[in-house]
Amino acid sequence: MDCDAVAKGIRDVHISNTSILAYNDKNALSCVIMLAYYNAVNEYTVVREMPTGKGYADVVFLPRKCSDKPAMIVELKYGKSTGEALRQIRESR
Image (tube, rainbow, N blue to C red; front, side, top):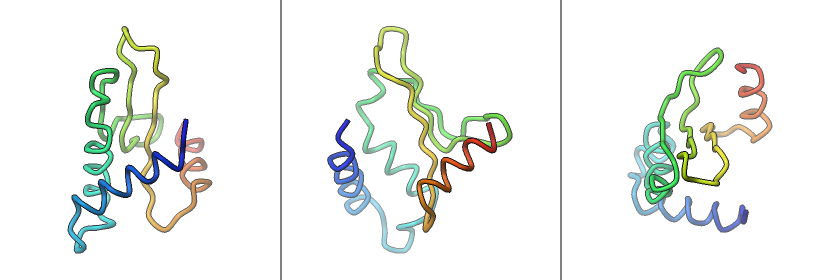
């Protein structure tokens, strides 16, 4: 519930684990999310490229039965706004 702390953590993982040549590569970004949320496997089943309505969600965190955590959907965008990502999610259902 602290977006600044989450952004800093992901930025730190991104900087320390991604080559400058692949810094904005979608696969590299997906791996960064997986590393940043490494311990999330205790609470979530993590699915990359999960088939959804009319496409695929980049990374989905499905809460385990014993977890009280909310589901999380990660849609990776480079050079686009969060509004664009939300629009894509809504249009693709």
